[in-house]
Image (cartoon, rainbow, N blue to C red; front, top):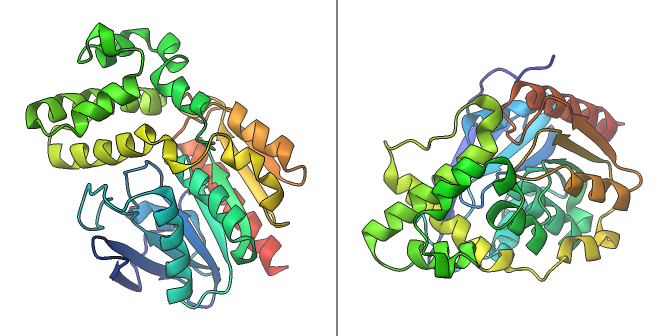
Amino acid sequence: MKTLYPEIQPSRNEHIAVDAVHSIYQEESGNPGGIPVVFLHGGPGSGSSENHRRYFNPDKYRIINFDQRGCNRSMPRGEIKNNTTQDLLADIELIRERLGIDAWLVFGGSWGSTLGLLYAQAYPDRVLGLILRGSFLARQADLDWFARYGANRIFADAWEEFLRPIPEAERGDLVAAYYRRVHGGDPEQQLEAARAWSTWAAKVVTYTLGVYEPGEEDREKMVHEVSIETHYAGHRYFIEENRILDNMHRIPQVPVHLIHGRRDLLCPLASSWTLHRALPDSTLEIVREGGHLAGEAPMIDALVRATDTMARELKG
């Protein structure tokens, strides 16, 4: 079974002022002469980490990681002003141009896969290939699975706790109800809502690992992440319904590897299966013991094998 490549440090990092509000963190590691790859982290609202460099052979890849607007080391943290899907796509392209990269491999999981697909449709000439994990198509049905019906049937006990902060009269649209509380200006209500949202999400995401309670040691970080996540969910990810599938003809003719955990209950397998059917030349690996998280051992194995395979394909 494949494991992550050894720990490496960035060869360079910087903060890039992308507008009057946001400064995004970006770093580079690996081989400066290798295949360029951009890692698109999930969320929306999480961030990149040191382990995200380790899915790629550092001798063969020039690895670019960055934190999306308002996330992690980007500043200001949790900021939702000038923070839309279109802004994030523009940031990806700005980084590519800034680094003098003609085209690169796009690697993304969950929300990162959404961005990867949208980027490939907007800038097909800039994409060498796609590796997408736990694909999220950002449709109403995908959001409903998380916050209306679907996952609630599997985690009925945790769902009851997710409902608790919301009055019955508002439970017809939980995303809107949580959005009002997280962005309403009442700090106590904001914290209660952020904790409930984060606990529910963590339960669905990490159940295969037996860990689902968000840490209390960094409440500010939790509020920032939920603020951005509800901002995007509340605005239906700033794209029209079915945008990705309606524009599959814009995906360039490049290698596409899809990896999806059979046990993924945040982004069910049907999304990657639908993508695979829409891209007949793509490969789809269904990881029998895998869930949603890239850091699960079966998912690491599949993802590292995919990057190794892609390195051979692109070199060839």
